[in-house]
Amino acid sequence: MIHAYDELYLDLAQRNLGDAFDFALVTLGIDLKLFNNIFSSSWVTKQFSQGNPKFVAGMNGCELARYILDESGLEYTDTEDAMYLDKSPEYWAGWTLAFYQWESGKSFGDILSNVPLSELLNMYEIYHQMDISKSVEYLDSRTKTMYSRLRRYRTLLGLSQSALSKSSGVALRQIQLFEQGERDINKTSAVTLFQLSKALGCRMNDLLEI
Image (cartoon, rainbow, N blue to C red):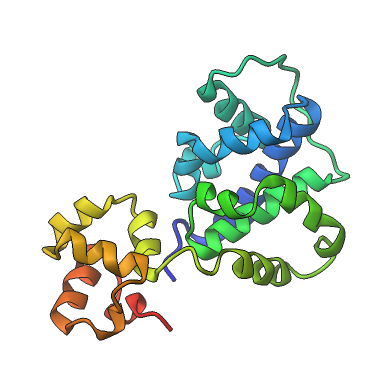
């Protein structure tokens, strides 16, 4: 799996997103469902998931939360930065979500469309003292039918299906069928697999479904 940013920055990214969730949901009191929708559709969070250093490591969690809220146009009553040693379930939800997005390569929006913030918060009681691999296993079980590997690599690079078609020379409809699971990429020609892997900067084997 190719990750959007180096593992060196993962701990900071997790802490920043945890602080952003805590600040938005607890300190500012933003409605949970509203924040779920804002966060899922945000350009800022897309940049975060693609490893933009400005958002991954260039600001603290409170600043990150403000960027996300300001982008949405939501009016809210701001306050001074607040980051606490005692971590809330909201912090844990952001911290876990950052890790899972990095590990899986799935977009935040697509993860939250299957596992909304309310469900992440419900996970806290059972999972917060476990190794994070247990949370990953659960989230995988909830999102396992979401993606082909081809789509994971494509979305990680921020490419549309049509852009991938143009850069690879593979027909758009064929890419759509691969991603929808209606055509088995494992049985496609080596030439097609090579064209796709070259355009995505990965190995041919990385696109095969196991």
